[in-house]
Length: 59
Image 1: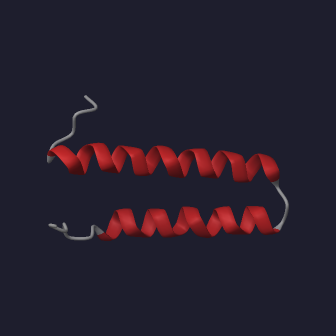
Image 2 (image 1 turned 90 degrees about the vertical axis):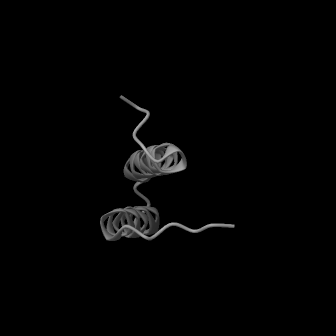
Image 3 (image 1 turned 120 degrees about the vertical axis):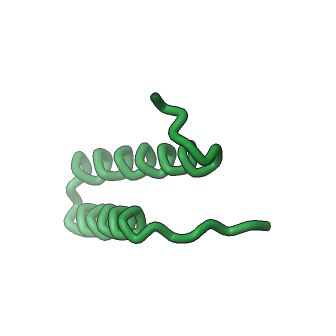
């Protein structure tokens, strides 16, 4: 099993989105938590597509 290097920018974005999602859930803001979770899943899906092939296939 081969692991790739962590990209600091992607790591900061993911940590920030997760922190915002937990905060939105804690303050019972359903619309904001739904929007953040959809954005987080889309961002992670984009990262997986780019990293799995080694190049950007979304173009």
